[in-house]
Amino acid sequence: MMQFMAIRQQLLAQIDRGLLPPGKKLPGERQLAETFSTTRVTLREALAVLEAEGRIYRRERRGWFVAPTPCAYDPSQLVDWQHDFSQHGGQFSWLSQKTPMASAAVSDQMQLPPFAQVFEGEGRIQIGQLPVGFVRTFLHPDYFPCVWQSGEQATLLNTPADANLDWLSSWEALDSDRAAVLEVPAGTPVLKVVREWNVQHSGASRTVRLDQEWWRQHAVALCGHSAR
Image 1 (cartoon, rainbow, N blue to C red):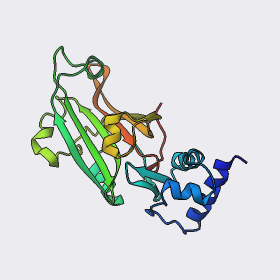
Image 2 (image 1 turned 180 degrees about the vertical axis):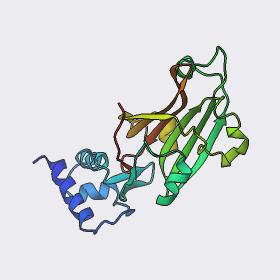
Image 3 (image 1 turned 30 degrees about the horizontal axis):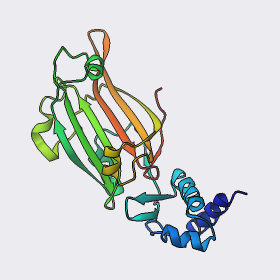
Image 4 (image 1 turned 120 degrees about the horizontal axis):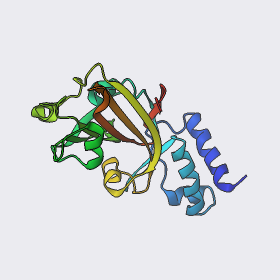
């Protein structure tokens, strides 16, 4: 067995036995490397495997921690992040609310006229003071005309009830801006979920809401089925 996998098994055994409970900070990398009589390069390979498995997570300049049990997340059921994640002790906050001119891709998808504006918002989900999710949403102005008037209290619970929701998931390496929001190094792999709400308009499907979400690996366990 490769040494980094043996280290991974030893750390995992302590996590599974409760000797390293959720939220517990692991010793520093230098100390761990000395404990396992290995190099920091090999140790980091073991930690990277545990991170990919969702068993530990890291915070920039703070170290490694044991991950809690992930929240069950069905993307086909969630409408409003604050409303749905509050049951898990989560807190959602808007980071920005803008009304820019829609990009060509968003304009085509939402069937907007030339030079039309779109409502764009970015937000963050925290659980126990730990940032676990970064979200970006695009909203069709005809269906969410007053959405930003409520400021930080803005809600998306008024998303059209007759809209069909499609979603898909993938893995993605974070760029520096999103990594800073989630307090992880740039390049960290995260779970990306894209969700689209579509309604019938003039005999064709029109997207009225488009969400992009980036989640820490340990934060959520997807359930339900993607429509794609």
